[in-house]
Image 1 (cartoon, rainbow, N blue to C red):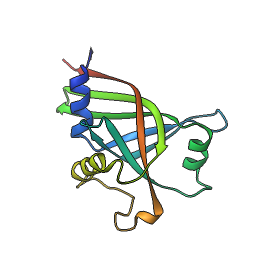
Image 2: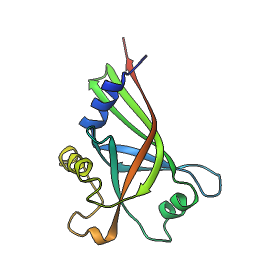
Image 3: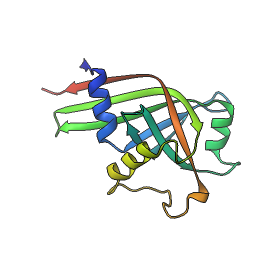
Image 4: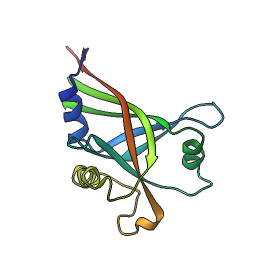
Length: 144
């Protein structure tokens, strides 16, 4: 296992579009992880997601209680031989679509073939969020 450089972490975030967002439980119990489509724009250091939620959803309850989150993305760079993973921590804050437009453009291009439960045609049911990055780390694992 080796640590990834910041440059390689940016590469992993820029080239991928699906990750797992882990929210803190409002009761202090098990964290609430959810797979999400995301976009990252290195020019603005902006990681964005948009979530479909209602005020009584578990996501909303978790974010209202604690906006500190962890986010993980991984990729297999050489089949069955090399994997890279990145973990990002920070605060997930509601934003506007205009504020994170470059990151959302990346989301669109990186997830064109990935399933995305959010309806792109009706943004009235979704909310854009920006993960304000406090820290990140990455690792590469090689087999053999």
